[in-house]
Figure 1: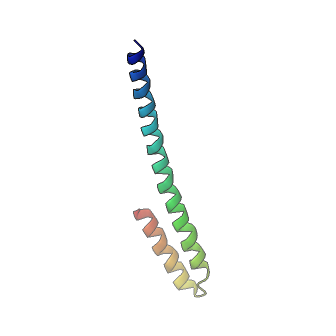
Figure 2 (figure 1 turned 60 degrees about the horizontal axis):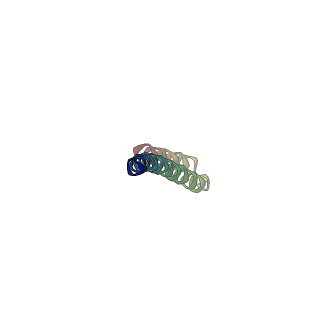
Figure 3 (figure 1 turned 45 degrees about the vertical axis):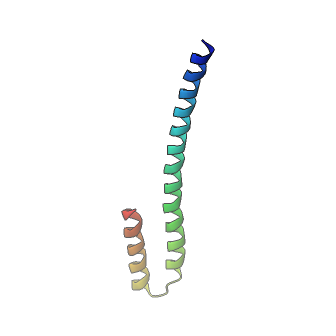
Length: 67
């Protein structure tokens, strides 16, 4: 009986752990995209030429949307 309860608890804990890790992976991916955007926009703001700055922001946007 104790073995069966232990086995059931192990399955539940492992399932929860897997689900939590998947969520954390998704959050890490989202944070990476946000950081890429932050750094890219920081560099783009330093471009004085309006047309080149707009082009850099557009390219950054396309890169972020593409993953």
